[in-house]
Structures are given as structure tokens and as C-alpha cells.
Amino acid sequence: MMPLALAGLASLVLAASPVMASSPTPYGSNLLSNAGAQAGHASPDGQSPVVIPGWDDTFANMTVVKYGTPGFPGTHESNKFGGGSKFFSTGPYDNVFNTCGDADQTIVLTGRGSAIDAGQIRARLSGRVAASGPAVAHLDLYFRTSNNHSVAVNGITKHTSNTGSSFVALGGSKVLPKHTRTLRIHIWASGVSSGYCKAYFDQLSVVIEHV
Image 1 (cartoon, rainbow, N blue to C red):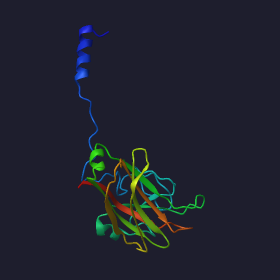
Image 2: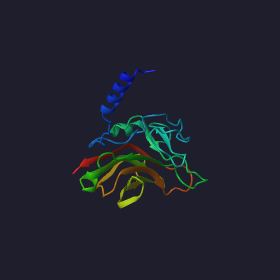
Image 3: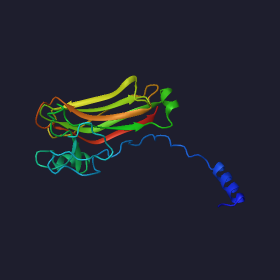
Image 4: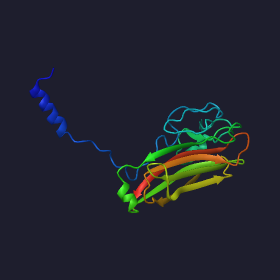
């Protein structure tokens, strides 16, 4: 048993220790985890789903593919913009749920509430996106409250189609509306009703800036 004198000293030390607060969400840094699909494994043929670190996939056909895999964009495409060895793919069309694969990631904005509510923070979304065949590739960033409720502006929504195997730059920015406390990026595809959903994503980025 600890002597009373030592117990009292320990209590004083604990009481004097500062409570560590969460650091504010940084400005100017990419807030996404595994933004370029480099973490984790790739599907050997682009057909099978894989676990994608840092991302939630509502429909399990979302996958990661290596550049140069037969039937997919080649390494020369990645070399154009420094895309690394892998990219995100929306995978085969799911005939049970009638949808392509998708993935999302939520960012909690910490210590920036006052600046957001004063209209002083802008969110910037960007990425490299490719789509071919009937696929339309969507790159969206939703603005939400801490309880996942809508705010005055839904977010930033971008899409592209008919790029072939070429990745094009997509992006946009908006000042965050009052009460925004979380951001959710969503990558997905539409326009496909069978076969493979040829919508691909790489070098995704979400950054906040003080304005």
C-alpha cells in the first residue's frame, strides 16, 4: 500500500498535470489517409475487392489496381503526374445491389469551429480521375455538422466521363458554411448497368485554408 504522504504527493502531481487538448486541424495539409491508394494490397487482376486502409466502402466491389495491369491504365499514365504504383477503381458492377463500388472517408474538423462559423475557412478538393465506357466518375466532398446533418451548402461535387485511360485533374473549393464540423469525401461511379465500372481515382486531396 502507498504511504499516505506519497499518495498525497501523487494526487497533487495528477491535479497539476495539464489536460492535453486535441490539436486544431492543420491548414494547408492533405487531411486524407491513404490518399493515393498506396497503402494496402492491390487486386491482382482488378476484379476482386481488397481492404483499403483509411477508407470505408459501402459496396464491397471497390478495389485498388496496379498501373500496368492488363486492361487498365498503364504506368506511363501514372508517370505523367506522379501517381505512384496503384489507383482506386470502382470495380465490377454489383448485380445484387445494382451499383458500382464506392468509398468514403470522414474528416473531423477540430478546434476550428469559431473560424468556420465566421466564414474564415475554405475547403479545397482535388484529385486525378479517369472514366471510360458508360461510366461517370464522381468526386464529391460533403459538408456536415458534428451529427452528420446538412448545412447551408451541401459541398463540392465534381464528375467526368469519356477520358479513356487518361487521368484528368478535378477539383474545386468553397468557404465552409456555418456549423460545418465534418467533411466527407465520396468517390463513386454512375452510368453503368453491367460489366466493369471503369471509374478510377488517384492523388486525392482535401485541404482547409484560412481566408
